[in-house]
Length: 252
Image (cartoon, rainbow, N blue to C red):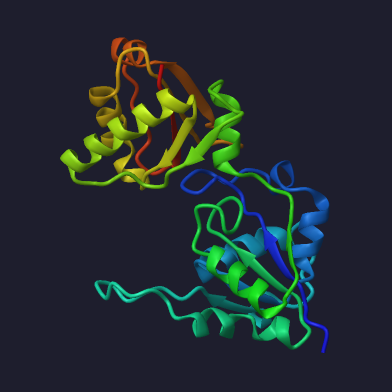
């Protein structure tokens, strides 16, 4: 049997903010494709249903929302230290292996980018299921574009450590790497720790290092500020505690 396709369906970036008009963020073709899918894998089923309800207002769903299959991505048991077994990811591909198309959606932005759905994409390739990414916003790429920092060489380094001493050591390491390779370093943090990360960056980084922070991109509350660390210190900013942000640094 010819397998279905795993479609990587982008979501909006308005998590924690008033919803932006969906058709201002996603192309009409993406909305039509999403509306036609009956099987979904999602980081959070409730968030996926909310997204599909917004889609339905613009492109009618192929079946009533309550009839769609939405299965959450498996998570490792807390404190187990063990990864999710490969069989769990393979099980999610059952609709695609039976010839049905399957959608993968993240809570925000592009699936599989800073997102656990990457493991499902890997399993799809291993199982011979075609993978097709659809066009939509990536907070990381939008923040990099808006930063004015080095866009020819960059790295996403994920979440910094939470413990202050370990976090400071990691930030110094990234700054040195950035300076040596002239490479922008991108990172994110859980929104309620945005302010703590910003303060750590301002305490640890050298005055000449460029620091950029973007939040609420693609929404009415969008902002990006890029400046030398010394200028940030002269005019501190307060970051929203519920809105995802992207931090970028470039050592000089």
